[in-house]
Image 1 (cartoon, rainbow, N blue to C red):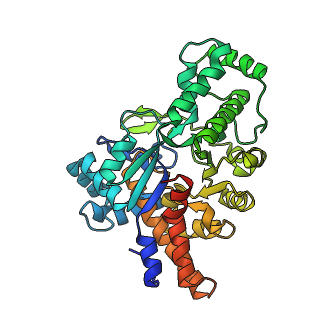
Image 2 (image 1 turned 180 degrees about the vertical axis):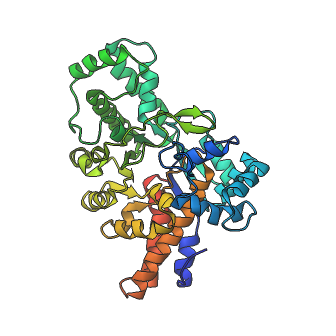
Length: 400
C-alpha cells in the first residue's frame, strides 16, 4: 500500500491504527448515482451536465483504491463500481471501508443533524473502533434559539445547554468561519449587547446564526465550558463549505443550495483568529484548526507560534488524493511535529474516510522517504513523527 520503500520501523508507524480526530457520519442508506456523486464532490452539488464527479482526483482514487475493497478490480468504471456498491448494500460497504481505513478511534462531529448519517456509536461499531462525539456549537445554539425563551434568559440557557452536551463530548467545534468569518472582534461581548442581539435573533429563531455579537458570545461561552471540562475547541477553517452545516437531504445526496464560506474564502483564513487565539493563551484551552486548505501554511505557523494550537489537513488529503504528499509537505515546512494530527474530515460517503486514511499514509510516506534520503531525519525520527501525527498527538490532546 505504501508507494516507496521505507525502514521497517517507519513502515510500521505509518500502517499503525490512527485516530481520526475529526469526521462526520456517513450515510446509513443506499443512494442513487446522482446522490453519491454529490457526496464525493467538494461542493455537495451535482456535476455539470454531461460530466461526472468521478472525473476528479477523489473520484479517480475511489475507482483505484476503494474498488478492490468492494471486491472489484482497480480502476473499475463508475457504473460497475456503483452497481457493486448497490449489490453489497450500504451497511456492508460502510463496514468494509470504515474498517479498511485502519482507524482505532473516530471523533464524530454530530452538527449535521441528519437522520441518514451514522451516529458516533454506529461509526465505531461498523469501523471496529472507539468513537466519541464532537459537539457542534452552532447546532446547540440553534436548539436554544428555537426553545421559545425570553432574550434575558438566552445567555444562561445557552451556557447550561453547552455544559450538558459537553459532559459526553471529546471536543467542542465551531463553524464561525462560515457564519461571520474568522476576523471577528476577539473580546467577550457585554451582557447588554448580547441581550439586544438575542432579542433580534429570537424574533426569527429558525434562521441561521450569523450575528457577530452572538457568534462571539457563543464562542466565549464554549471557552468557559471547555476550560471547566478540559476539552479542546475546534475551528473549521479554509475554503470548504463548513462540513454539512445546514445541509438537508435531497435526491439521495446531501445538499442545500449555496454553501457557507464559498465565495468568501479570505474570511476563513485561520490567521484571522490570531487575536482570539492570543486571548485564550492564558486560559489553558486547546485550539484545533481543522481543514485549513489552502491556508494550511498559515495554520502551521499559528501552531508553531502558540503552544495551545494544533492543526490537521482534513478532507484536502482525500480530495487531492495522489497529490496529498504536496499538502503534507507544505504543512511540515512549519508545523511542530507534536502539533499536527490526522483528521479525515469525511462526511456522507465512507469512501472519503477510507481515502483520507490511505492518502495520508501514502502521502506522508513520500515525505518521510525524502527526508530520510536527504539525511535530514533518521529512521527513528521519521517513525516517531508518523506515530505522533497518526495517533499520539490526538491521544494526548483528547485524553484518549
